[in-house]
Image (cartoon, rainbow, N blue to C red; front, side):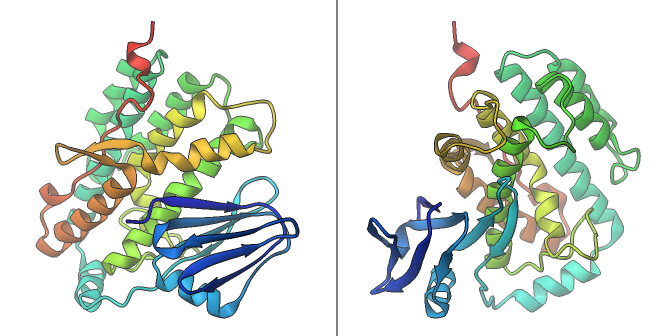
Length: 300
């Protein structure tokens, strides 16, 4: 089972030989089995992939994410998985009635809000009860945009004065972590046979991954928890900071009354969404529940 997240930050020549990822740099050469790799992260200039190597990398189910100077995602290369049920699922996505979409979206948003509230409690911050209350007001496809109101207030409890639209160390850490989670969700959606552009709530015609932006919401608090203790004073994240954020995929969550790694939880969530859509039953949708990664609730 793939478990490694490979980060390349120096000028490199990257290719594949004998099912091994080969990374050649001026001072060193590295070799890693493809079967061990989940994600390849590229930060910086002059990182070159061979065409055949990229083909083998994506065929192995590995996603490649490229980040810019401010650690914001700029490039995503994801595997293409032909799926025997792709057409059936696509037809159901296209023909999904608005009532089912709204019910699924309501369920997703309620879990996002509850996970956000729980994160405040885990971190020992104020606001748990106030944010939790928002979840009971979500209905009819969140027609009153309760999600946005809850998020705005949540971030003020999380980090007073935070503006999610500015460039600062807090947003740098959050955006980097969200990009990692989003990339993994995209991989899971494509491997399951979904068309990522067809969202439940998000419907930007210029966004090829609207559905991923729907499903990331219950997972955001997981990045928030990991980011809280590593936020520094620089928008340029250190190797240690990035490692902590990418490692969230290997932390545990609870889903369908089972404890599992978040990466497996994402796959379970995506597969359950497929079943919910095919059977038109929102009860089949299983969403991850936030756990305490660092035993913070029991700190002295």
